[in-house]
Image (cartoon, rainbow, N blue to C red; front, side, top):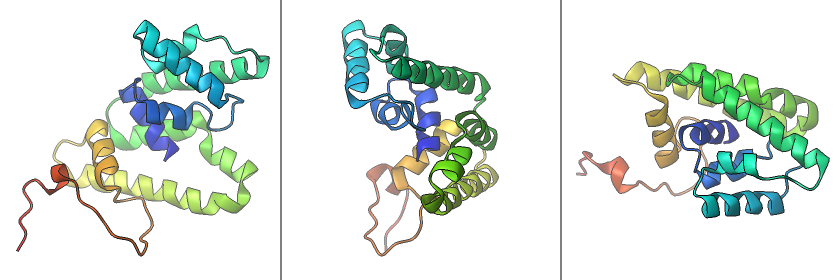
Length: 171
């Protein structure tokens, strides 16, 4: 989920859900109060959440260092994303170091999450192969609409959005 959110935030720096998901992942000592303060700065100044980070000064040095690290990852990722799907995912994985973080700090949960990351990679390749014009923004939009391609099948009810059903015939 965080890889998708990092990419979504690069595409839309005002995406508050993605911002909240990744600003402190992997852990950077950025707390809820800091996130809320950044959102407030964004609203007051009319700037993106990412730009509001530049105007926010955390009280603790550790939080300030974490915020600088987040901004560095964000800006480097922004420079590397070209619109191509698989290379963008790989850039996000490399720059965020999420795979290393999981292997080193969360070994029990790591296998399932790493499997999900592999599913995301495979879903990206499949999307690129079946789409006439595969762009990252469309891939992310499709993932957010239906969640297919990287989630484990469960015994749950599936819902379809009106957008997703457009052009689908029911008999």
